[in-house]
Length: 354
Image 1 (cartoon, helix red, strand yellow):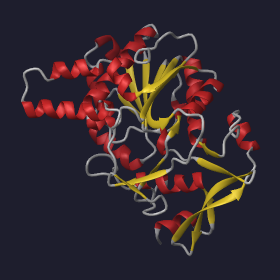
Image 2 (tube, helix red, strand yellow; image 1 turned 60 degrees about the vertical axis):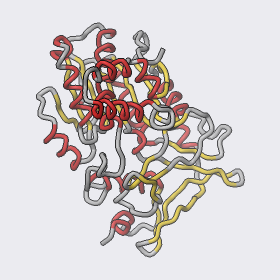
Image 3 (spheres, one colour; image 1 turned 135 degrees about the vertical axis):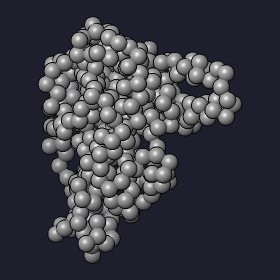
């Protein structure tokens, strides 16, 4: 039985979000359940793997935020979708240099993929790290949530306006082998009510981050109850008008979304304007949205690179700056990757955003 027939079984079509969820996260045949997609030999690479300096800057940011929270004796650092564990490893290394913080922190990793969790468990041996199955397991203590390329891989719904009537996008299966997109008349009232947003205003196309809203709702409850905030790195845009950003990647190249199902990544660009509305509706304070390159430079990443490259081999120095360029350059990750930070109201902290 091929992947397509397993996804659809006896159904002829599925809503886009259901199709994405099955293609990526099914425990038997889902993309993230079968392989490690991250790295040079995988399908894509992330900032923590490009340069350890990314994780160092984020580690320093976490410590500074903890200080603004009053240096609580216990602080949760929750990483959503930790991939192959590189960011977590760097954070542990940074935190170990600051005794008070090192005594206070505990990292909690939320990973849906059993395959990736096994990789993480082999790699990360620190007793300061625990794995959780849901955000609701966090019961106490101020919490800093970290998400790097997490929300872009969550299932979304798509709606398109045709002749004044909204349609929801489905994926239709033909003869257990061919897939096509199919639009079906839809009622947006339920979606609007769920998100408490006027989504359809001045839009002809909507990407609705249905799973992201569920996560953000759970996260907001913990932040409001126990204090803290969330910082998120992801590729996306800030313009109000939405567009179809669904894409598939295989072996570091774009792939057709309905081909290689279960064997290629499916992602979308985050609409940060919509995210900011969702966050405000959840009763949190949005500190800001900036570009990854700007945030990292404000955190002192270039200064740190200059220190590391003093009196070292030219080839090593060149490699450090080459990797740094990938993180900062506006033509690479520097501009398309955005950073969004939100927190409990009343907490004054804006490092990297002002």
